[in-house]
Length: 396
Image (cartoon, rainbow, N blue to C red; front, side, top):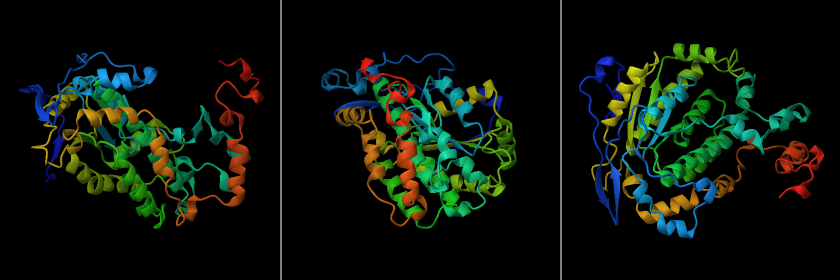
């Protein structure tokens, strides 16, 4: 039996029969009116959003805060949808197809390369000249490590959480500046699934988890939770076939990407993550053992368009992040979600004294300073490094 608050969609062309799309309605929230309730499926057509404000180019200054009221931009499709699922299940392709059904913007899963890239340069390229203790430790390193119990993956896990938060902040900024809803693949709210699964596998230490959770809970408290979480379900045998099909060198033939790890991820999603997301929004589980065709996606869109994405009242814990918004709060969000400075504060606020496995020894730290941080591609802005033949004097 499915848990309360969870809708499971069985893909069927017959599901198209008799479907209707509800319109939006308005409820009063303090001094403003916020469009809520159901979404409107467009099935590949454009939604009549207001002309988007080019916030990325023009910023969001004092005058714009006065004249560009956020509440006017919000509409029935101004929603955040998170797409989750096991490795390789097909989240990105599904997210793109779903976004087309409602004219939403897709924010793909944050790649691990973001963690290791500065000014467009992936410093993993320097691994060969770094001492063993200073080498970047990525997922390929984890999956091939004969001793993953050392806990080195904790470095990447924390940095990746920060990168996911940055992507999610960008998604929220887009929603409030334009009114266009977003589909986020792997939101930071689901990051704990991987941390808990790695701890279950023995790859993260006992001391690491309180440190990780303290930072995670503090930063997520600053973010608005998704209206809807979609979980793509497929058996481990199917997941393995799809992983084989995408032929990622870090995954194919790896010693640690085992059935046990994949099953632990699935179990953690079901027992830990999805129940949490049901408390703050709606959850839809979709059987994705066989990828749906276009008619199936239309059926899914119509089903989602029927889901009520609002609480019963302002005291309802579901959707309270959204129903308690007012214009002042949204102005503050639009102003603060334009940079990562606050994220830097959260992730630098506490030193991991009890997590020696993610700290660098003095020699490794010195090598990182001399080889990575002093590398011209990192030390200088792109196109200005003298070592690469650029003359910064001619840069305007």
